[in-house]
Amino acid sequence: MQIRRLDEITVNQIAAGEVVERPASVIKELVENALDAGATRVEVSTAAGGKTYMSVVDNGHGMTGDDLQLAISRHCTSKMEHGLSAIQSLGFRGEALPSIGSVAKLSLTSRQHDGTDGARIDVEGGTVSGPKPSASNPGTRVEVRDLFYATPARLKFMKSERAESTAINDVIRRIAMAAPAVGFSLSGTERQILDFPKCSADAAGRKKRIAQVLGQEFADNCIELNVERDGVSITGLISLPSYHRGNAAHQYAYVNGRPIKDRQILGALRGAYSDMLVRDRFPVVVLFIDIDPALVDVNVHPAKADVRFRDPGLVRGLIVSGIRHALAQEGVRASTSAASAMSEAFKPGFHVNNSQHQNIESQQGWQRPLEQDFTSHSYSSANGFHENSQSRMSDMPPVVRDLAEVSPRTDNTEAARKETQFPLGAARAQIHDTYIVSQTENSVVIVDQHAAHERLVFESLKKALSERVMPSQMLLVPDIIDLNADEAEALLVVSNELERFGLLIESFGPGAIAVRGTPAILGDTDTHSLIRDLAGDILDGGQTDGTLRLKDMIEKVASTMACHGSVRAGRRMRNEEMNALLRQMEATPGSSTCNHGRPTFIELQLADMERLFGRR
Image 1 (spheres, rainbow, N blue to C red):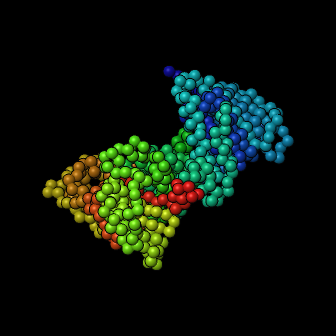
Image 2 (cartoon, rainbow, N blue to C red):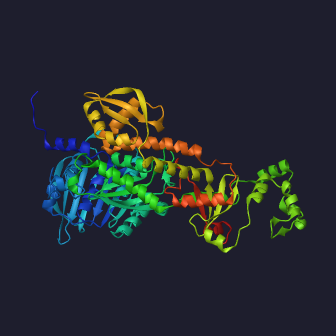
Image 3 (cartoon, rainbow, N blue to C red):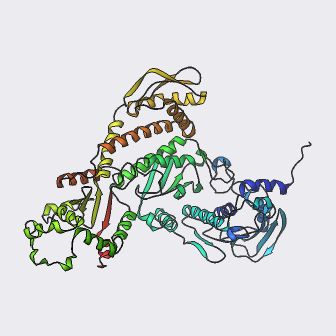
């Protein structure tokens, strides 16, 4: 078969298969072009989820008629002044517009700010018409109609209008967080879906934009991150461990302002929150990574959604250490979502209905308070209840009787008032032998004593493990594990680091590793699986990943030990013990969650309680 050169339209349609995956990818390319053109306002409109119509209007630099003709030609761009090693713009290949024009009906209308006349060019299925004069505001308007009409086979793979609209919505939200100084709007055929007013370009403006996109609840439950090392800077907002979601869709990462979806970064986030989250729960994170363009390759994915770092271990290590340090510096802090849920639970009529009251009365033989004669019940300033009232305690339902027995009178001494100034306040009661109720100056705190002590024990174990070499369990007969040459070499490079964690390995000929000892704390373990997983981690993410996995495994064992060695629910504690536990929590990093990710305490603000009782 004779080799022949493909025509330009076919070449562009092939390229469109990589660049134009769905309407959302078209919007992404066009909005990024608008940002590269210096726009401060971008308006997006769609119909039928982008299948029949899309438009992107910006107030950027604009283009002349000659510029328009070059813009719809393949491999024509204004963004490659410094080559691939110093890309500072969002787009750079010059493929998007000709690819879109080859599979849809494309129209570009533009005028420069200092120009008097605008110009328009049309591309329909790869056929160019124009440019020609056209009335236009300063900036550029791009319209796309009937996407994939020229390649009907692609239409079969389009999803529902709702699914495509959701994908477009996500694209705008992701881009908007990286460009707070730009106003964005997204409207459909019936209504405006998104509207993000322009904010300042500083850190405060970025936080305000993130609150616009992700909601004020996230802004109230996040911590600022700002770390830098060896020319790599990472800033952004990370959620408290007690504020999480059911999937990773709310984790956003940007490299030099470019939205990306990178496996290594997602893995670093899992490592940073590894002992703070419930299984299968994910933190909400917005990370901005600023790095020298020469140290990152953005030309590895057709949609530019993936990147390659020259030193991935540095980036991963900076993310993990930066997040853990930020969480430790934040101290004890409960999420507002837990307090909101508790407020809802306390609302009248939430959990007990009238029939339940009647059941309690009939089963316990207890009358309603209004039907009783309380004249014989007097209070004593010495012990709370008079003897007559104590004698009637047995007539009360269990829930009332237990509460009365464990609720001590608040001490008004100066020392007691000073205790309420601590972040977790002063212990006032223990209810159901499980929960500690403490009082601060402006709130009430309820602490799960088992979860709290579990975190304290776990952190003590981790500190002990980090301060000394882990003991090894020597094998009577070394395990010989066959690997490929790359895997074996990667393991041997970090053998000294692995030895610190109790894993003793050495070379056993080409492509083979001899395991002489395993970490004693792991007990009986599958040596073959352990070694293969470590080798895979090292090759996949850098030399530090193998040691991080081994460290995580050891910490999981320590977590189990902490769970079994902590104060159990059901144990009655003295007031001194409760206050000592609260002070330890305040001094321990990550104490707002246990090592399984459950919250250790919930804080209800005094203002919230006043609203519950109609005082506000």
